[in-house]
Length: 189
Image 1 (spheres, rainbow, N blue to C red):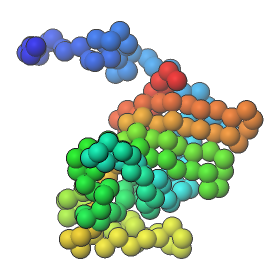
Image 2 (tube, rainbow, N blue to C red; image 1 turned 90 degrees about the horizontal axis):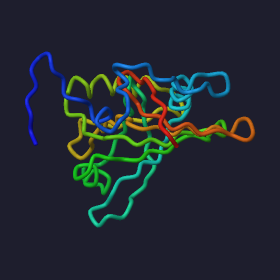
Image 3 (cartoon, rainbow, N blue to C red; image 1 turned 180 degrees about the vertical axis):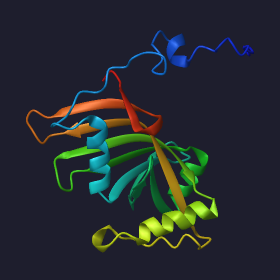
Image 4 (cartoon, rainbow, N blue to C red; image 1 turned 45 degrees about the horizontal axis):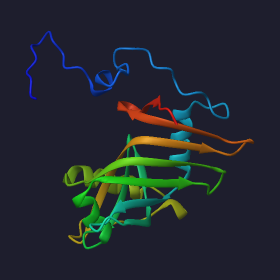
């Protein structure tokens, strides 16, 4: 049922309707520190120390499709380059929900991310991303050539992050919702 609300009235959030407090209007406990770092800082550190991620999409027949892609974290999003003729592009075009897994290359810790992906089409944003990609050196570098009509730059915005850290026994896992500006809200595991 559709309902309009006056400027003084506010539609209850989905979380409030489900009996959970809204993070905008209540104090939410910050996720516990992991290995001396707050989970947000640790997530960003893991994202920045890796360059390749596994990305999972859903094929039209319902089967998962997982491949490896280079990525760049810039701000609050992950960027990667794919062919417009690829299975990944068709899958994301049909259903923007993706799963991302990365980490473990330098430390026994990693991230499993539920995200929404979309194509970057703004030419100024593409130029900015090209400059950021070209600024990378050595093994971190990759050249996407997004001016080509057969290539698309994709942006993935994390929604839920599972942080796994086995640097100290017995290891730990934190499940968190990503809120604007990479604030993290703990979720029940």
